[in-house]
Length: 565
Ligand code: GLC
Image 1 (cartoon, rainbow, N blue to C red):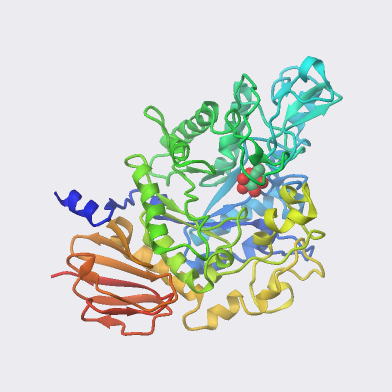
Image 2: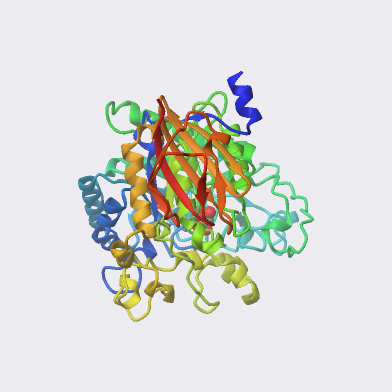
C-alpha cells in the first residue's frame, strides 16, 4: 500500500548503505598532469600532489583516484602505458609514489590507481615481443591478416574511438593489429589467459604498495567478437565515415568477454581482501559509457560479482536547459535498474567531459554539487569541481588530446577534451599557483583570477565553503548516509528527502530563473519544520517554523534538517 502510494506520488524510496568505507565515500579524481607542478617543468607531478594533499583533507574527501601516472609516451595523456610497474619520469619516481602513499595514510586519504587493461602503449615490451612473434607472446595482442593477406586493406571495417580504421599494419609481423583508441594503443588480447594473469599480477603489485583499489578504464572495449564481423552503419546524421559513431559497435562493445575479465578481477580482489580480514576492503570501479542495461552488468550477473560500482554517467549530458524533472528521471533510471544490494554513485564530470560549471547554468553549480552529496551512495568529484572551476581555453595549436588532434582543426572545439584538463586554480599568482614555468603543458585559464581556491577560502559562502559543508555533513549525518531517499519535482524545483526514523534531511533546488513557493506538505509527510544548514542563493530565514510557504528564489538550493514529533 505504502509503495503504491509512493509510486502514485512519483517518489522513489531507496535505502542508503554504509557498511563498508567506500559505500558513502567521496572519491576525488586527481588529474596528475594538471594538479600541481613541484619542479617548474610545467607538468604536474607526484611531489606536487604530496604538497597539496592537505587540500583534499581540507575538502573532506575520503579517497583520491589518480589518472595514470605509469611510464608512458603520453600519446593519450598516460592512458598509453609502456610499463605498468613504473612511474613516468615527468611525474617522479617510485620513491615519490611511496611517499605519496605514506602521506595519504597519515591524512587518512585512500589512494586509488587508474588501471588500463584494454590496451598498452606500442612502446610496451609485450608489444615488441608480440610483434616479433617471440615465443609465449605471439597472442598478447589482437593480430589478424588482411583479406587475402592484403597489406592495404584492414581485416574488417572496425573504427577507432579516435577516428579512422581500428587496424594498423605491422610490416615487422606482416599482420594487422587492433587499436580501438590511438594507433599507439594496441588492444591486448584477453582471449589469452596469460594476458588476464599479467593484469592480475599488476593489480597485486599496486595493492601490495598500499593502494585501496582501481578505477578500471574503458572496460566495454576489453573483448571483441571472435568472428571479427563487419559492424553495421549507424545511419546517425552528420557523422563522417571515419568517426567512431559511423558504425554500431555490435562486435567490439560490451562483449561477454569484457564482463568476464572484470568479474575475474573482482574475484581476485575478493581473494586479496579475504586473506586480510579486518582491513578496509580493496575495491574496483569501472568506466563504461553504455546503455543502462549493459552498464548495470558491470556490477555483476546472477553468478558473479563485478565492480563494487560502475560509474554513473547519467548526469553527464545535463546542460543549461536541463530541468528538475530531467534529474528525477535520471536518478530513477539508475536506481530502478541497479541490481539489489548494490551501491549507487553520482558523477557530474571527469577529464573526458566538459566541466560541470561550463555545462550547466553557472548559478546552479552549487545545487548540482549538493545533489551529488544528497543522493544515496558514493559521491565523485573531478578536481576543480569543489571550486566550480570552468573549462579552460585551448587552441588547436595548443591541443594534446589525440581524439581531436587526429581530426580536423574545425572540429577541435567540438571534440577536444583539453578544455576540462587545464591546470587547477590554486590562487591568483603566476599560472594560478600551479607551476613556476613560463609555459605549462596546457595553458592555464585566465579565469583563475576570479575563480581560485585561495579566494574561495576567504569568502563567506563560496563554492568551496559549500563543498566543505557537504562533505562534513556527510560524515556527521547518519540519516544522509543510511536514510531512505524520496525524490520528486514541482515544475523546475527538485525536492529530495532522506529519512531515518524521525530524522529528515531535506534538499530543495530551484533550477529555474523564477522564484517559486514550495509547500513541503504537498510532497512529503512528517516534515513540520526545517533548519537550513547549507544554502546557495538563499538568504531567507535559517529556521523555518512553517514549511508550507518556502520562497525559493531562482537558482536557490538549500539543505535543511528536520525531526518529526
Ligand atoms: C578512457 C579514459 C580516456 C582515454 C580512453 C582510452 O575513456 O578516461 O581519457 O582516452 O579511456 O584509454
